[in-house]
Image (cartoon, rainbow, N blue to C red; front, side, top):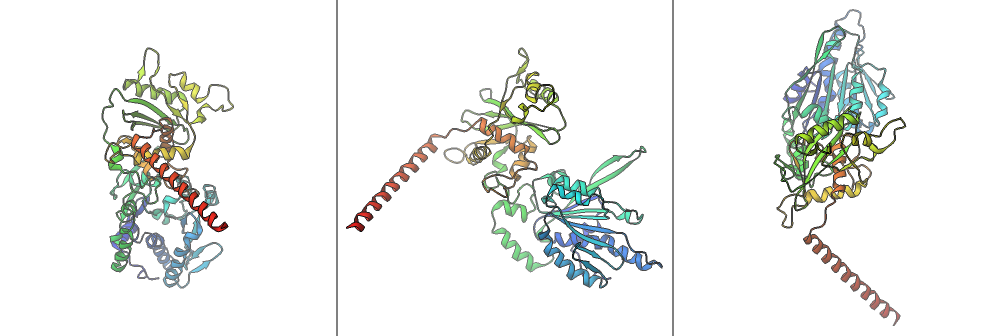
Length: 486
């Protein structure tokens, strides 16, 4: 078995040598992430297992088992084709099972290709054991899929237990992958450790790390030049994501064309007393819930100046926290024992759950926190947000129609990264970290923006021109009919 079939570039070698429990190898397009992911079990387990098998007088087969995931199986075709070219040369005794999509090497070590199109597909792997788990384009998977399958990382072999690995590769995305691996150290190479208490009173340390890779890391100069030319011809947000490895400029994001963090994200400032305030809420218990506070200036521009994110809290606990926040900010009327503010919330908080007792809305109103049912018209709400993001006054250089304080961290990190729906290009994708977008959309409908005079003038001119064009068309048709009948 020769290792010369694959000569890792320095950043690929760094990836293979890393001993963190979970490794994200990602960033730009083109540095060889998928190849490194395919070869990682070879570099870190198979070579070792093959030598152990050769050294064993009894030739006991390895029980090592690697699995390499993509969200949908057709996306594995090129990787599988590459594995045939490399693995057959690497180990002439290796066999391929086309039904199970699994390689079995001479020493008994297995490498399987798997996929999980739906969240429920994760249960197909519920009783399996893997010594190596690889996630290609991990951002395409849900966090539930990732965390569930990773519980299958185990082996009874004491030597392999020292080499267990979870590795991933991905281009920049704005979903859970960024918050899990990148947000704590966007430049990468910073180990994030956490202590896990055990039942015997001891603790073990688990770690994860992001190793950035860029196109410049690819050792093939001709490939680099050709691919860089292609990427530099793309829109700015795609260049930043796929060429510069910017995890906060996501290619394919719905609001990529209109959301500019230099324009729409601002440092906190004191809200003037004359500005109208309101808040909105997207409810959640097992999933994230969030409350956002907004102020409207005298030109009808909005600024989101505060957010409160919660999970696992009941209605009373959320209401008490809103009370505390608003009391400290002078937004609570202590004489009336209620908030001075109101705003839209998800209509589910008025739903009867089938149990005895008040609804979520009633429970919160008992504590002085009042809401109004949101207007659920996502298409209209998205248009409102889009136009507010795009609007910068009559001359195009004024205050944006909506801004976000930098301290609204989840809003400014998730909203620009929301993808586009697979079924409707006019809507953002559903699911994932869309709670902050949904809450913002409720506010957009609550504070629907009136058209400015210059926009009304433009609209009148447009319809005047349209009407004149239609009149000319009718006249032409009339003349044509007269001529034809003559």
